Length: 328
Image (cartoon, rainbow, N blue to C red; front, side):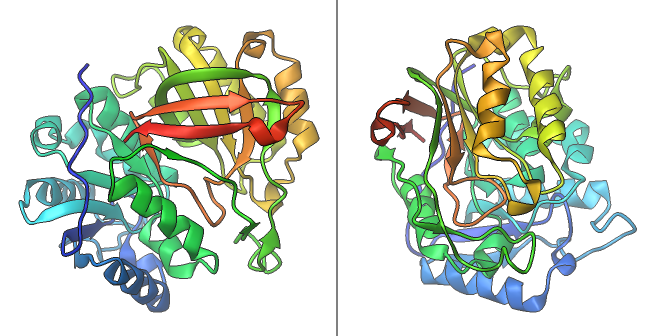
């Protein structure tokens, strides 16, 4: 399938905030206002999906109204980017009701993470559109380490130049009062040597796995997997979800893997990840880098699902390890 890359953003462009997973009203007004203010500081004009405020018993609007907001955002010629207000649990309810031709024929920036992973990888599978795993409005609105996040948000969404990723100096976990503190980042974990070039697939692991066996699962051929999970995923949960992905016939096409930084409450350590990799012969020749700045902590990298990345991992000289985003 042909890969489609939307036009990059510029000052004065309109960004439409929608709620395909959970509603705007599940967040505090202070978080909403702070997120909007940061987008305006980037020179963007903020508008909202008509139904983003509706909350039913599932903490979101009915399926038809969420689909209508998604379609409207892609069809509106004034809208240049679409941003999810937050993640949640219900985005995969939409998949069978989306008109994928609307998305394919009106390509534009689509950004979010967590439960939004299901829409982004389905977009790649059904249309070839490159979308962007990056901050939802909610994370922009509550982060105390926003500089790194917005730097890579701009690198990925406002420019088409390749860029190298650097580890952040600090992070926040958000899963406890202690996690709200700003902590020193220990850097990347080089888990397995090698080099790889491939198409980026992934995001939130347990959400990506919802697509297995469906027409919405993207190809893993010549792919580099970016995988993360939230505090509800402890080691045994992450391990078996990861194993489920390995069981896919196309997993042999995976050329490299990056694991995002885990929240403090997950209690997943470097040593656990090393063991998880070591016991699996399927991973023997796959370069793997962990504790990378994406996922349910802040700050976070924005990366293109469907874009191209180059990965280098060197255990003996970890300073040589890194990832470069080539096309986005």
